[in-house]
Image (tube, rainbow, N blue to C red; front, side, top):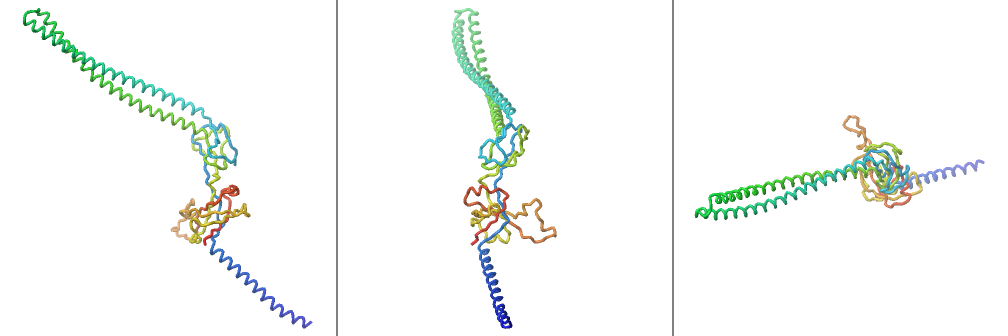
Length: 349
């Protein structure tokens, strides 16, 4: 018995150092492995899935006539999703078209008046030429009658008739000569009227275009391809301009926002490869790359950003949002939803 006890003591002395050595070697190997890994990688689990979310806002008011989607339905850009009652806008469009037609007729009438005034100028100028011929003939007759009168070949009455005809022709010439500038001024006035009515015509056309635009807003379409969520309307509901109706999560705008500590930023560069693991799909690894860095830390964009000049300064490691895009799109990537938690590993070496 004493011999067996003496044999066990040396064995115990040998086993314990071996176990301790193995533990130390394992710890050393693990430490070297972790140091090597983290010296070539930057890791954070403070990351989430983000996406471009387009809120759809009513641009005109009206009663909801049709809703052509259900919550969480996949839609394509341009699909008609909501139709508002457009009867009021149809009436406004008809009124604008009627006003435009009336204004066009006014312009046409004014143009006709301009054409008439221009033809009156030509008539007045022809009358002037005719009156000049009459004056020439009256002057010739007066000269002949004056010579005959001096030779006592005609009576005083015949000479007076020739003189009166001459003066009458000259007076008629002066009258028709005044008609030319009068008709010219009339043309100018009518042309100004045409210009004024034409300017109103442009305004009426703008009213028609605006009415058509307002009418088009009663048909609300999907701004992007994606999933419709947060429906806030019902059939028959009166919506107001500016009211948010629903939102569309862009199916092709999914990306990762990773909030790295400021002490982790030094090795990070745009274009570096990233491995992404989503908590929802832990067995799958997504691949991406760094796309951009935020212009400020997350705290600066908060509702009440901290002010270190208040005297209550406590140094806190800040985090900077880093945008990471997916390298390859896949059906599994499309299953990710904004807000999901992910972990990212950046290959810095």
